[in-house]
Structures are given as structure tokens and as C-alpha cells.
Image 1 (cartoon, rainbow, N blue to C red):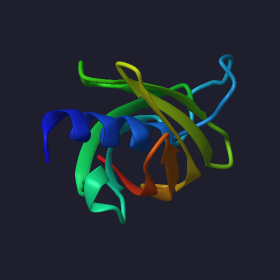
Image 2: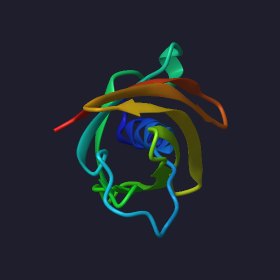
Image 3: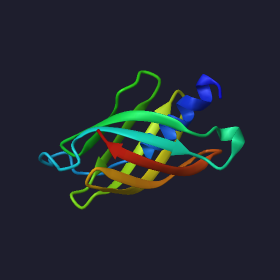
Image 4: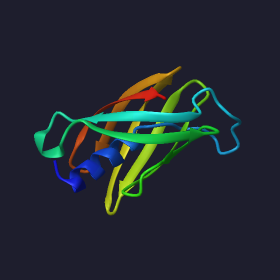
Length: 118
């Protein structure tokens, strides 16, 4: 899979992460997470992994190729937007303790994601 497709997938996956108010205090979900992005479509690529950080319930990317933004609610529901250049993906799901899962959707691709807290 070429670099651009990986960046799009990573962007899509990170989009599938957390939602929390900006004034939220430290949450149990804060820390470093590895997120694996999957798609059933060969043309969208499959198996990309991205590292993200959550601080005070806010999601942020750790790579220069894409940006991630979103929030994690106290109960663990998440909403994330990933972007790389003109590409953008949105994801939703739930975190529970040290893991999580959900779905993501971009302009031409969609799939699932799983996350593991480091």
C-alpha cells in the first residue's frame, strides 16, 4: 500500500476516536494508544496502525502526515476526525479501560478500528 493510502487510512481511523468537553479533567482514557485501522476494500488498504494520545479527554495525533482531533466522553464513547491534506475521515466507537473499537467512514472508504492503550 502506498504512503498516501496509509495516511488516509490512519486519518480515517483516528477520526473514529474520542469526544469530551474541552474543560474536562484528566480521564481514565488519557495516555498513549495504538489504533489499528481496517477496511474490507482492497483499494482502501488494510492493516494500518497509528499512535494517538489522549489528554484531558482530547484526542491528538502524534504523526506529521495527519492530524487527529476529537474527544472521549467520561463513559468512553468517542468521536474523532482525521485529516491528511484534502482527505478526511470520521470515526465513532467506545473505549473501555485499555481497549476500544468502532467504525470509520471517509469519502470513498469505510471500515472498523480497534485500539489498545499502551
